Amino acid sequence: MPGPTWLGAVLVLGVQLRALWPVAAIEVYTSKEVYAVNGTSLRLKCTFSSSSPISPLLSVTWNFQPEDLSSHEPVFYYLKEPYTPSAGRFKGRITWDGHIERHDVSIVIWDLQPTDNGTFTCQVKNPRDIDGTIGEVRLRVVQKVNFSEIHFLAIAIGSACGLMIIVVTLVIICRHRRKKQQEKMIEVADTEL
Image (spheres, rainbow, N blue to C red):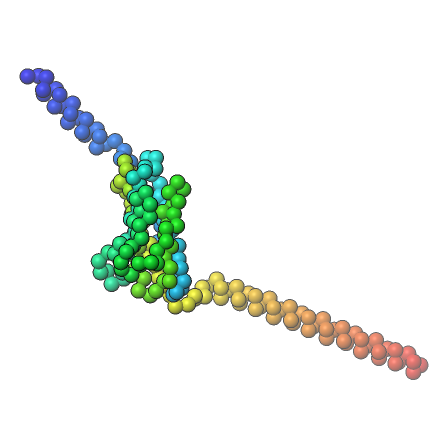
């Protein structure tokens, strides 16, 4: 019975070697956090890379988890064509904005509301590459745009430059008037002589 033992050893070795073989995995990329103004729309960008060619069975799943950490809600699904939600908070507010051939699986959310604050996940499966990272992006819906430190710095520098131009202009005007007055005084003095 040396035949079956040898065959068993080869099978076990094959399984062990396969475990060491690099596994193909899909990588998904999103921003970590985005801000948007209440009532506007926002493109949630999600891209991917895959070691396999793009399959006709590639699927994309977008989900949402509110800030209160209640259950996940489906937002969007793609398999050969886009499927928008037929119920829930995102019904009628999601548009497909991706391009599979460019490895882009982004969506647009319309009429953002404070209740949309939370974490969106983007998962891509490209058969042969079905395991991998899941993209997560945290959305913050704000009431109005806040000025950042860069905006304040730009305003401060612009104001200082404007003030310097005004001061220099006033100094030039004052010197010009003094010079005119001195010329008049010299003319008057010359005519008196």
